[in-house]
Image 1 (cartoon, rainbow, N blue to C red):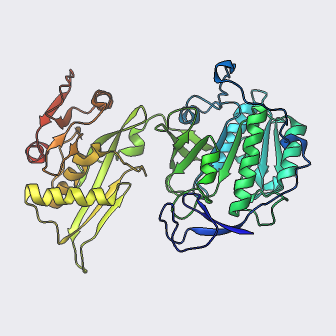
Image 2 (image 1 turned 90 degrees about the vertical axis):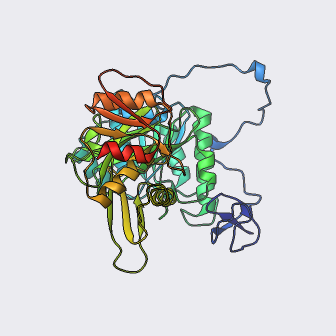
Image 3 (image 1 turned 60 degrees about the vertical axis):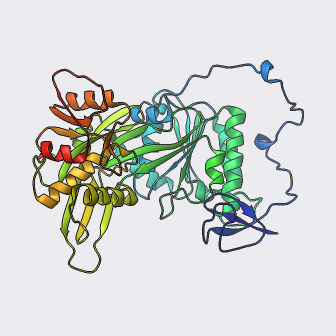
Amino acid sequence: MSTYFCSECGNEVTKWSGKCPHCGAWNSLKESSRVIGKKKSKHTIIESPENVKPIQLNNVQITKEERIKTGITEFDCVLGGGIVPGMVILIGGEPGIGKSTLMLQISNKLAKESKKILYVSGEESTQQILLRSKRLGVKSDNIFLFCTYNLLKILDQIQLIDADLVIIDSIQSVSSEKIDSAPGTISQLRECTLILTQIAKKFNLPIILIGHVTKDGFVAGPKIIEHIVDTVLYFEGDKNHHFKILRTSKNRFGSTNEIGLFEMRKEGLVEVKDTTEMFINEEKNSIGSSIGCIIEGSRPFLIEVQSLVSSASYGNSQRVAIGFDHKRLAVLIAVIEKVLGIELRNYDIFVNIIGGLKVLEPSLDLAIIISIISSFQEKPVLEKTVLIGEVGLNGNIRNVAQMEKRVKEAKKLGYQKICISQNNNLKEKNISLIKTKNIAEVLSFVF
């Protein structure tokens, strides 16, 4: 019997249609075989005890589990302090961005602490993995390579080796013999992920699953895979760009706002300690450039915004945003035209966030507006100036959260002037806080 799963939300329906009735996504229903009356598994590791009974909440015994430190600070920070025993982690990213490299480096760090690592690969041979490990300097008797796509064989090795950590590269390559479909299909993904999660919870065994991503940047397969696992991580950044960002979209054991910063080098992924080089260009007083400040989790980052305004020679003018919401950009351009009276309808406008970062918070509004005007008027912004503030539809500058952290970060990096909203009562020594009401007042100061 066939059923259909939505690849966007995981909703299950019995008939195909062009639109998912649950989330409204078009052309997202994929056919899958439904498993009905499947035989009981002969594998003892996945057999559930029949004498399990409900227990009263007040009688549950709390056991304190120590997190496993991987030795890679940025990765531990993203997870909330380290790997929790029994934790299932799904990590996704574009091909070649560094997922397998990071997993080998984590394996090497833990192996040095006498942890047994089972590294399962269904896509590469042992020779291919060995070549990468030699390049990364990974060498340990505690790392066991196992190249297969058979789920039952993987479960056998988990019991035989008694591993402390299992890495599956990738979950799309693993298949179960109980389901008559190819690896990577929705039914296989759901079944294999569910069984591996049960094993992780039963034996307090942390498991890391590497997942492929779609052209939209999401882990391939229905959202039900993300619902099963405990933590979902995404690698961001161009695979040809040497800076990489590891972001959490789901975490049952920590915050979802933290990010990890890495740089791809010959010896592998290296943690980034100084973010100035990553997000700020060395060139000073460049036209169309401004400095803003954002908060990612608990960490402030100064980032550079670059804008290019040029005459639209062909057809309608373009509005292109890289690392920023293009709808938000359209709103800010409309504010510039309405409040400042600057006509931009006949100009192409391109906005780029340096470093490959994707910014969602509105604290960068003021920096983007000033960078656009700087490019239009061909005037550079004053040196050592940071622009922080959300801009309303009437041009007023609004206060943003955690301003004290942002100001301290700018001061630490040697910036002398910070433009903020006049509604902020913050006071800081040895730095000039320029409090303004609207964007018109900012223009008289920054140029």
